[in-house]
Length: 118
Image (cartoon, rainbow, N blue to C red):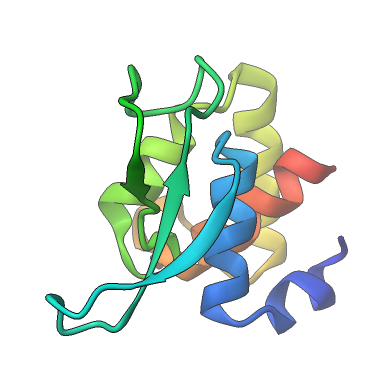
């Protein structure tokens, strides 16, 4: 994907893309009437062993809200190796973020996708 394609993704599409890059599989919506948010993205099964937050348990595991949650993006960033971190920071700058410390969760998602798919 290029910058324009990544920036054009909705928050929901970006959330799914980052989750897939973090090892989530079989992502699908469930309707949970007990929650205020009627559509919750979940994972069924186990992601790859090197995914952040492991070890995993069987069943539905909520997919983090990467575009809106800096803590979730910090966990995703932990997947990056030394070479990828440099590329990631370059992608943040290409997206208009001069410093990592002020990058929004959305900007971090976009840079993460560009880095992992680049």
